[in-house]
Image (cartoon, rainbow, N blue to C red; front, top):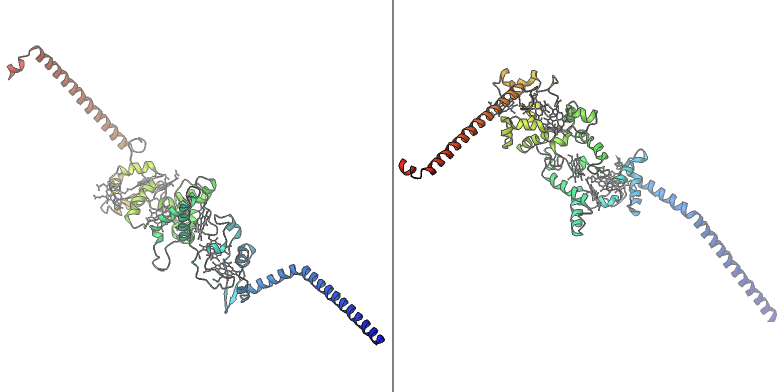
Length: 413
Ligand code: HEC
Ligand code: HEC
Ligand code: HEC
Ligand code: HEC
Ligand code: HEC
Ligand code: HEC
Ligand code: HEC
Ligand code: HEC
């Protein structure tokens, strides 16, 4: 049927046109959706990430699904420069993450490093962390390996500072601080990071003015956390006043007497012998005069029992001998000597531990005796040489006489 066929053809045409229109509409909608998605995608992801971070901060499992372990992510919780750190609630226990000063970390010798390069045990960003099997960050282990690698690559010259670290480690290993603590055997007395902080470590190079400033902080490094009593007493001493009040770095800080990484137990002879040299590295004159005394001679032979500098002067509270509180002030001196010389009387302390022969004003007797001895020596020598000279003169004359009388020897026989 032509009319029917015509209707069919029109129907198909309409069908096709609607299809095409539908396809166009679908495409337009698709593009519209895509455009919307593109327009909103950026902010949306940020919003989503922030939401995730908030979730993370809440200690939820989502963290495990987004293990992005870069420094920025770690710092979302650990950054101390962003004001107060947020505590995290886990099983009723609220735990505060430790704050990391990111600015100081950036300026430290490790400023370029990733957190997880050191914290191999941290494998997630959940709170609390599910600690992985990785080793805890450790100066010693890490730096021994770095130095071995530098040696293999022949880079020991370029990386000389890494060698300094290893030398300090070797010295430290024999020190009192490297031994297990008496009360808590699982800890050493003091580890590298008790005195240094891996995050801020930046001891300036030797010989710079920044090193000088750093040097003045040393009493606090030793005394703030651990040796509070010693620091308190030290602050009252000549040395402490010079360093802490006058910022004069010539006076002794803890490490000048105790050494830095090789600190010995003060009850051992090694300490008792070496401490004398340490005082003497600054007080050269006093060391010299001390060495001339009985005490000094015995100490030099390697015995710690005689009087050492600190037996007479004290250690952390050393004062000028003119100070009435000084252990060697004339009023207190007898008591100081009596610690060892129980029978000592007032006459005993006329002995001058630092008497020298070149200070007439201070040690006149010693000066006079020494000059007398020199004069005596000069006279003895003069007499001796004169006597010898005359003797030779006589001998020469006798020989000459013998030459002139060749048979004289026979005659005398
Ligand atoms: C969701 C917040 C959050 C994030 C992100 C986070 N931490 Fe922590 N972190 C904590 C909390 C809370 C603690 C204290 C509880 C604990 O010991 O797990 C902690 C503890 C630590 C500790 C000490 C562990 C110990 O044994 O004392 C280290 C190290 C640490 N985080 C490193 C990292 C590193 C590295 C990253 C990045 C990969 C990171 N954290 C990311 C919250 C976080
Ligand atoms: C050069 C290595 C190193 C780098 C880099 C480093 N740390 Fe540490 N971190 C240590 C050492 C060493 C300790 C102390 C020993 C320990 O507890 O494992 C420590 C301790 C911590 C602690 C425990 C609390 C404390 O202060 O003792 C947290 C938290 C921490 N680090 C987070 C971070 C974060 C976050 C970063 C990156 C922004 C980072 N660390 C970078 C070495 C490093
Ligand atoms: C997990 C590894 C790791 C730990 C832990 C670590 N360091 Fe380092 N340290 C490095 C790396 C890597 C460098 C850079 C090495 C280079 O320059 O090639 C470095 C550099 C240094 C430097 C500077 C060397 C230079 O070239 O100037 C010093 C000093 C130093 N570290 C001391 C320490 C001290 C002290 C501690 C502990 C309180 C410590 N480090 C903990 C890995 C570590
Ligand atoms: C008892 C505290 C203490 C301990 C423990 C300690 N140090 Fe030190 N360290 C110091 C002091 C103080 C100085 C500064 C010395 C100076 O100015 O002469 C220093 C200096 C350094 C320097 C810089 C040396 C230089 O000449 O530039 C390095 C590197 C160093 N220490 C690494 C270590 C390492 C590695 C350990 C662990 C094996 C460690 N320290 C353990 C107190 C300590
Ligand atoms: C002028 C040298 C000198 C200085 C500076 C010095 N010490 Fe000592 N220290 C000694 C002598 C000597 C002894 C051993 C005799 C004694 O016990 O008094 C000693 C002993 C110690 C002991 C063993 C316990 C004790 O008290 O007998 C500690 C701990 C100590 N010093 C810490 C410090 C600290 C921390 C500082 C810096 C604030 C410091 N010392 C500065 C000379 C010094
Ligand atoms: C037997 C005790 C005794 C010993 C040991 C001793 N001193 Fe003295 N020291 C004194 C007396 C007493 C004075 C003050 C009297 C004087 O002027 O001779 C003094 C004075 C000093 C002074 C003040 C400056 C001066 O020359 O008058 C210094 C510094 C000093 N001693 C350092 C040392 C050093 C360093 C050692 C160790 C190498 C040491 N002393 C060992 C008793 C001692
Ligand atoms: C790092 C160098 C250094 C070391 C180490 C050192 N001193 Fe001193 N000491 C000084 C300086 C600087 C003064 C201040 C001198 C002044 O005021 O004229 C001083 C002052 C003194 C004085 C007072 C001197 C006076 O006439 O007022 C005595 C006593 C003394 N020291 C004894 C010691 C003894 C004992 C030791 C070792 C246990 C020691 N010192 C270690 C640098 C040092
Ligand atoms: C830490 C202990 C100690 C202190 C403090 C001490 N001495 Fe001595 N002194 C000795 C010993 C030990 C001998 C050796 C004694 C011996 O074997 O005969 C000695 C020997 C001497 C000698 C020479 C030997 C003798 O006895 O005839 C004189 C002098 C002397 N001391 C003076 C002093 C004076 C002065 C003081 C105080 C300013 C003093 N001593 C503080 C331990 C000490």
